[in-house]
Figure 1 (cartoon, helix red, strand yellow):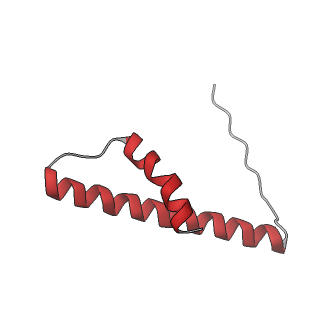
Figure 2 (tube, one colour; figure 1 turned 180 degrees about the vertical axis):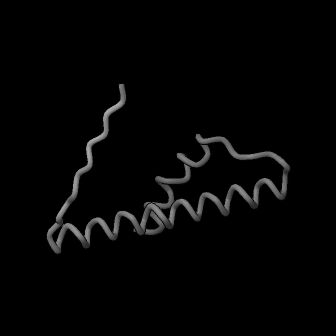
Length: 65
């Protein structure tokens, strides 16, 4: 049997800002990785592996703090 629990959060103002920054960074990285995937596929006809995407992240954290 599957069960579900619904939870409603009421973050403070500081928490809202932190969540907005985190979601914004995640959205930016998703779009960056998607663009890299599309460009690589157009050039080679093959998709990138997950390890390539994970390898990009530390470098991007330094470039875009």
